[in-house]
Amino acid sequence: MGNGTRHYWDMPRQQLRDALQALHAELESGAEIAADDREALLQAVGEIQQALSRGEAEPPEEGSLSQRMSALIEDLETSHPRFAETLRNLSEALSNLGI
Image 1: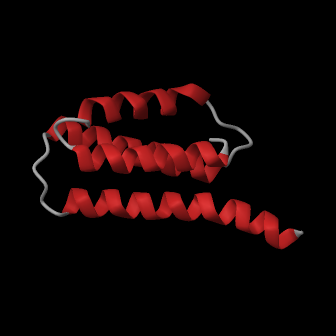
Image 2: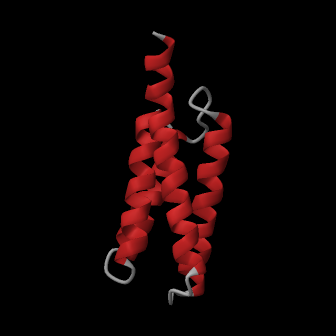
C-alpha cells in the first residue's frame, strides 16, 4: 500500500527533476536564445522549484504558474521548439502532482 503511494509521488517528481535537468543542460549548451527568453525560462525554473518546495498543500496563485508556462511555451514554440517541449514536460509533471 505505502509502496504504491511512493511510486505515485516519485514518478511525477522524477519527471520534474529530469525535465529541469534537461532545461538547465539546454540553457548551458550555448543554445542561441534571446536574453529575455533566457530570463523567462530561468524565472519559470525558479517558480517550479518554489512550487515543489511548497508541495500541493498550498499552491498560491494556483493558475498563474500554469498560465505563465503556457504563454512561454507558446512564445518559444517556433523559435526554440526544444525549450518549448521541455516546458511542456515540466507543465505535465506539475499537473500530475496537483501543482
